[in-house]
Image (cartoon, rainbow, N blue to C red):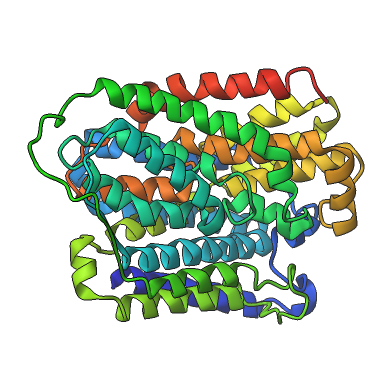
Amino acid sequence: MKIIKTLSLLLLLLTAASLEIKAETIPAEITPAAVSETAGEHELPSAIMVLPFIILLGMIATGPLFYHHFWEKNYPKIAIVLGLITASYYLFSLGDTHVLLHTGAEYISFIALLASLFVASGSILIKVDKKSTPMLNTGLLLFGSVIANVIGTTGASMLLIRPFIMINRDRIKAYHVIFFIFMVSNIGGALTPIGDPPLFLGFLRGVSFFWFVEHIWYIWLPTILLVAVIFYFLDSKDKSGSDTEKEYTGKIEIKGLKNLFYLGAILIAVFIDPAVMPWVPSLAPLPFGIREIIQLSIVYLAYKTADREILKDNEFDFEPIKEVAYLFVGIFATMIPALQLIAHEAKVFGESLDAGIFYWSTGLLSGFLDNAPTFLNFFSAEMGKFSLDVNKVEDVRIFQDLHPLYLQAISVAAVFFGAMTYIGNGPNFMVKSICERAGIKMPSFFAYMVKYSIPILIPIFTVVWLVFYFGKG
């Protein structure tokens, strides 16, 4: 439980820091909108401070490949040290505590959601006693893509990755997992605010709940079907394990259904936010709210009440969420300068940026930065282009109604391009870690891009751009 102790220490430090700031000097809530209001009061970071992020990204890419044992032993220390370098710069050089508190609050929200979904879904056992076939595999990926909009990409990924591995245990290859990441962990969750964090941030700012499905379904459907067709073609060519003489009953068995209650509670908690329900009390200046308290409590309760046999059959342990927690605490901290510089440039040149440029900018950066703050920064820049304020709900409603192309472009890009790298979206790393612990040899950071995401996804995303955004706006 070392990871829980580390996260508890981080929570205590952020709480202590927030309580040291006088209440009248900070907004009522620590939110991205509140931070953007105060951002102008602080000078921009030096471009040199992007180096810790570049170093961390480089080590994530090269560590497992060239110095595996050193990386496995020391990645938590490396991520924390690089994060502390950036945090110290903001604290002592720029004197900017607001952005640090916001980033800390965002990280706690991020890890609370992922950890609760990881534990709750890890306590559900799904056994599918059917022969692995291209049709079955494709159907499972499409099913996961649909339910990702109901229980989130993280929930769908954690619920289905283990049965997907078991179905293909005699013929599992890296491409099976890569397409699972493409479809279930990313592209699938583009239709609702529950599906992926960027869309939920848009919802918190005032975008109507059903706006996303209304304006994205006709992009989502052909994209997800095209990726599914490519997977079916590759899987049909793979004949390994197809000659097994094992007999199958065709039964589907599900155990641990009581954890559906925990999954439901986690999803309900997502909406327990003062920005969504005004009657919900804010815990400001604490860097967390009632939502995070509920989700972190479910981490404890779901694990304590889980059936030990189910955990054993799922080969459940905390290593995947531990890896995400440590690496992303470094990513969240070190990416602050990059995001601020990008946001500044986007606002400066906003007048000359059309929907297509916003699409590519949001997408490519979402593949390497956390897609939620990337989305929010370009959302703010887009609205600034039309003299609207992302912090005003009435302005957001005007924007979604009068300029839907721009909002659609960054929404599609933030979700779709999260599949470009292992760090593009939180579930990607957890799926990778679970598969590696199951003995599946996964491609390196660079191999993932060179062999899979660039040759497969970039052509598809280019077609999306040509059809929907080229020369528009």
